[in-house]
Amino acid sequence: MIDLKELQRDFDGVSENLQRRGLDKKLIKNLREISEILKSKKQEVEGYQAEQNKNSKLFGEYLKEKKDITELKVKVAKNKEDIARLNDELRVVEDKLFKIALNVPNLIDDDVPNGADENDNIELKKVLEPKEFNFTPKEHWDIDNNWIDFEKGVKLSKSRFSVLLNDGARIYRALINYMLDFNRSRGFSEVTLPYIANEETLLGTGQLPKFEDDLFKIVDEQLYLIPTAEVALVNLYRDEIININELPMKLTAYTECFRKEAGSAGRDTRGMIRQHQFGKVELVSITKPDESEEIFEEMVNCASDLLTSLKLPHRIVKLCTGDIGFGANKTIDLEVWLPGQNRYREISSVSNTKDFQARRAKIRFKDGKKNRLVHTLNGSSLAIGRTLIAIMENYQKEDGTIEIPSILQKYLT
Image 1 (spheres, rainbow, N blue to C red):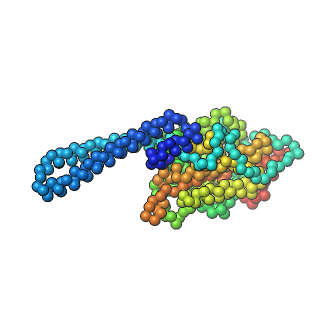
Image 2 (cartoon, rainbow, N blue to C red):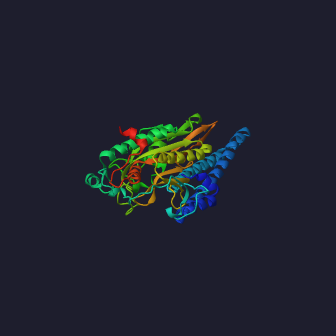
Image 3 (cartoon, one colour):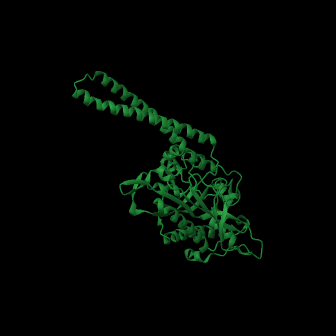
């Protein structure tokens, strides 16, 4: 959540930042109106409270001077009732502002480029050169090696589910183990998590209330299948005060992820690029504010080096204002080369949310005598299914067989 105190202190500056995202002007107008009402109510309460303090002091003076306090008592009692009434009104306005703010995205960093959509993202660099084939490389769904069965996925569930078979299933499992081992070697502690989260957990990382339509909800329960391990990893420390000596916390976890993909109708309907269920190894860091940028670079490098170790060509891209996620202050995407599609496709997204999630989830650390909000960061390292199809397309042979990356072979013995 954005800092509501900063919103009231510098509404024009916050509004200008949010407008770079293209935030609905009606929502910004509502924020301004409610903020002004809240400010006015607070001033009114402060005025009555000052009057109450003044009258309270008069009690001592009246008693000392043996004056009649009957009228003063009535005045104080009336003022006390007014303060209680105004505080009730203040809480209503604060709650209204809070509920509106839950749907307001994070402020974006100054170095996030302006742009309308993914076409305006900025390529920072390419890593590894794509392989040259002496035949026309196929897309992963056209490689006939009995690794992926899309029809069985539909039979068991519905469209955008798939079944992995034979070496496809084995390599999928090998990738999970390799990625977790790789991340542990970079200082990330491994965690095993539930795949179901409650409303408070999803509220803490920003999936609720705005993105409820993209979540799979458990019938008759206030529970949802997780869309990413980030949700659970960040909320491990919800409503806690962390010892400063424990920071930074660097965590990694494998989970299956579940998304309705409600906003992606018609996109990537073939293959395994956009599934309702997909495996992902996640990185999450919880840091002091002055460390988050350094950790951000570490996480980008960790994901990039993982791809490099698999000898998968990729590029590193800075997301523009029109493509950046709801909770992110800044985001770097890694896009892997898919020769069958003859294009780069997203395989990892690393974001620094600064204190946006920490404010929602009330995650703080003790800095001397003061409690401060942590910064939280998240990143894919990597999406398992997309890594599998990147291996299929980049390591394919003309006869349809797939060469196994050497780094994975020990996981397949």
